[in-house]
Amino acid sequence: MSAVPGALATHHYFDRDVGGMAVKLLPSEYYVTTTDTVLTTVLGSCVSACIVDIENGVAGMNHFMLPEDGEATARDQTESMRYGAYAMDVLIRELVRSGARRDRLQAKVFGGAAVLANMTTLNIGDRNADFVLRYLNAERISVAAQDLRGQHARRVCFMPASGKAVVRKLRGHADVQLIQKEEGELLRKLGGPRVGVSPYRSNNSTADAMSVVKNKGSW
Image (cartoon, rainbow, N blue to C red; front, side, top):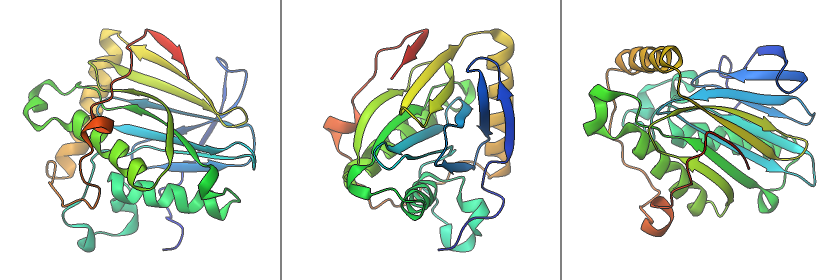
């Protein structure tokens, strides 16, 4: 599997909140770095995994929209990045390619909120949260921290140099409406969630783990 053109985040900017250069990830994107460039994203029902090998100084983040793709064989690589199973595979592969060691990888996972009111019966946020925990458990990658599910969207800032993540809950009406609109449009473009068959079976003790909801937290 080669690099995924079009899925690598390209929005570089100076983040005044962290006082340094940052890369903003949009849905279906990932980024791996060996520098102290901060990785940021905004999540509603989507999930991001922040994975780091602190000793080798390699870290990365992804942003996926749905857990599995039941029609993965019919899609190209860029489209497949929308789905967790492929997005996680790509992120881990690129981390190792950049010098990380699998046995030293640690993950912090965020997102999976119930922000799409008209899609609550599909449990998109819960499905994404359950999936990422099952995947990491199956791959034997430890979860150092998590802030999953709940009702609020999140802005995540991940500092690769330290492995620290700062999460801010977005409660403003305008922020929530924008995220609902963007995620709703993305899901409609996908033709609605597809239920694929995942190799990562449910592990209730892991999947049911819930983080404490905070207005702003550091992990």
